[in-house]
Amino acid sequence: MRIRNINLSQGAIWKQILLFALPLLVTNLMQQLYSIADLMIVGNFSGVDAMAGIGATTSLINMLIGLALGLATGVAVVTVQVNSSEDLDGLYKVVHTSYALAFASGILLTLVGSLFAPSLLRLMNTPEEIFPYASSYLRIYFLSALPVTTYNIGAGILRGVGDTRHPFIFLSLGVILNIGLDFLFVGVFAWGVTGAAWAYVIAQLITALLVTLSLATSVTPFRLFLRDIAFHPSILFRSLKVGLPAGLQSLIVALSGVFIQTFINRFGKHAVAGFSASARSDSLVFVLVSGLSLSVMTFVGANMAAGRQDRLRKGFRQSLILAMVLVTFLSGLLILLRRPIALAFNPDPEVTAYTVRIITVILAFYWIFALTEILGASLRGLGYSFYPMMVSLVCMAGVRLLWMLVVLPIWNDFDVIIMAYPVSWALSLLAYIPYFKRKGRQFLVHEPGLEEEGLYQEGPGTYLLHETSHELSSTIVGPAALGSQEEGNIPGGDSGGR
Figure 1: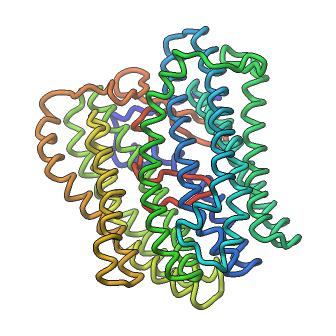
Figure 2 (figure 1 turned 90 degrees about the vertical axis):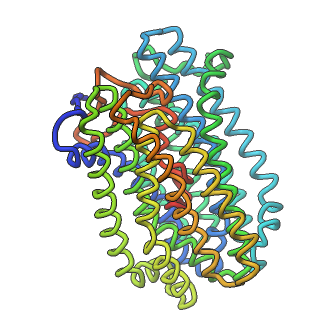
């Protein structure tokens, strides 16, 4: 694998931001294909009830995957730190503690999910006609908790030591296998939601085995010995110190999604199916926003570290313009194609009507979400990570809950539920502006410490990109590398600022 340095403190700013975002966009897009394929194939081959059944489970699935990704982030951060210090014994402990954590958390999540799935669906007022589909799908889906945590943590180890090629290949194979099995189990065998769930579990199992095999057969200091998998308390504490806050933040935001799903369920199966299809559709724009925001965060951090404060103001303005132009273009394109997109998921007229309606409202305001992400990313790049986290929790979770409890009872209309998203984005933007202005005055005077974010640097202002024949992917990890503080990029679930 060849390594090429991308110096973010030199060159055309907008080009550097795009170049750095490209591998993130490709990887995140591959992840979204899991959920898009599942819903589209089930919607066309198994009907509205089955499609709505899968849609009703999405918010619960987001909680599971959010926790897994949080733990993986903690592992990646510690791996980078230990690998950078050339502590071979520490690297050995990181690998084997990480796998012990993956197994323990995966088994626990499987048991909890399998036992409580039906009760949770009842609490969410899941429509009776789709309840059997949702319950069956969720019970099988939670069997993927162990392979999901194993893959994400194993991939986190590989990325932490600079290998981004293999995780990308394994992810791509998983997506292809998932789609192929979806067509086989749902389209040919007519297994419905059960087939879709098993397709996902098998695909995740294969990716977990591949990443484990890669670590177990490598002739490197980070080789995995299955017999040596065990907890090392010091490493476990360091991983959880980073991973638990990240996972809990995802969990809290996902809980607001569960709450919103509960109110959507009251409008029936067609509303549930349409909401789920629209979320899969706007996730394509979310992929763009999350890639740009992480790239901007890294750009700001790199130029602060390099002392290139002259580029910060230009970079900030150009990133806002870039995000606005790209997001407006892609959102506009999807709005124009909203009816064909809706029909691709399910031809039912009521489902199509809901899907078209939601896509129009959500994507019309998506530029606001893009601006909040650029502002938050800029602050995180400067080392101010606490305020963006609080904005996310208060506005993306708290405001949406209050909206459902206060506004919806006054105007009991489906559109009121959907407007919770633009309203929360707008309030996030308003919360960022005064804080950003106050901190912005300091950008050109002194350099806030970047160590808070744990960014991995290779010389002042230079971040490594690994170039292969298959991909170009960044090696940026740390709490800030979560990018968006929304649900995140969740394979098999919805995201898209939801």
